[in-house]
Structure formats: structure tokens, C-alpha cells
Length: 142
Image 1 (cartoon, rainbow, N blue to C red):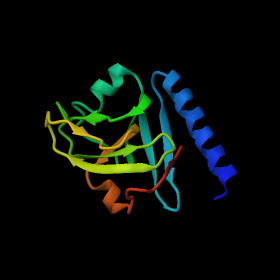
Image 2 (cartoon, rainbow, N blue to C red):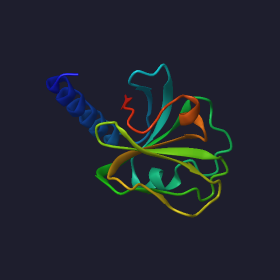
Image 3 (cartoon, rainbow, N blue to C red):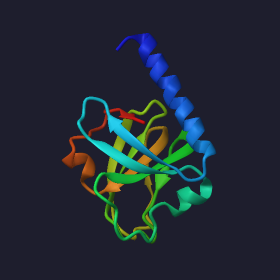
Image 4 (cartoon, rainbow, N blue to C red):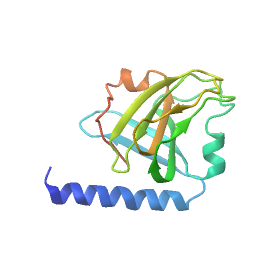
């Protein structure tokens, strides 16, 4: 991919993040570069929605999840307080690259923190990334 196209993609993704951070409730569809799979994601972009996350949710449909968007990139932490579903989380950079993927334990109050500076995190049913061959280094598109 040319440098110009990469710069455009990064700026476009940043613009989308700004737009989604202004809306209170939204769903977006996401795809992955060179992968034949998509996700429908609930946008969690406020302190209140990020704190609540998927708490008390008993079912998460196939190919769906939640995207957490923070105002800036930094070391981000997630937990499973009051969340009965086994989930996997991917920490994602501001340009959409998957930095780290972790499995999380239902109801655990232990924080799962990114090692790298992340701007977003995507939670899905546990094993979804592995099942769909989504790995660290892959890029998500909205």
C-alpha cells in the first residue's frame, strides 16, 4: 500500500473515531484487511458506557461485540466485573492495528491491561479471534 494511501486511511480512521466519540449510542460494522469476516459492534465511547461495557449481558450474538474508544492512546485496562460471558479482547492502535489479544474470565475483577498504547479495544465471544484467524498485526476497518 502506498504511503499516500496509508496516510489517507489513518486520517479517515481518525475522523471516524471523532465522529463516533460524539455520538451517544451507535453500532458499526467492522471488517478486517485480507479476511473474509465482519463484526457488528456496539460503540462504547463515554466514561459511563465504557464502565458498563457488557456487564450483565447473558448472550452475545455470533459476529458481534463491543468497541471501546478512548479519547487518547495510552495503556488501557479492561475487567469482567458482573460480566457472565467468557470474552476475548483485542487492544487496537489509533490506526486500527491489533496490538494484543487476551481471553478474559467471567466475573473477574482482575484488570487485563494493554502493554502497548491502545486507542480502542474490541470485546467478542471468547475464541472468536482465533476461530476467525484474526491475529496480532491484523487491521480492523470501519
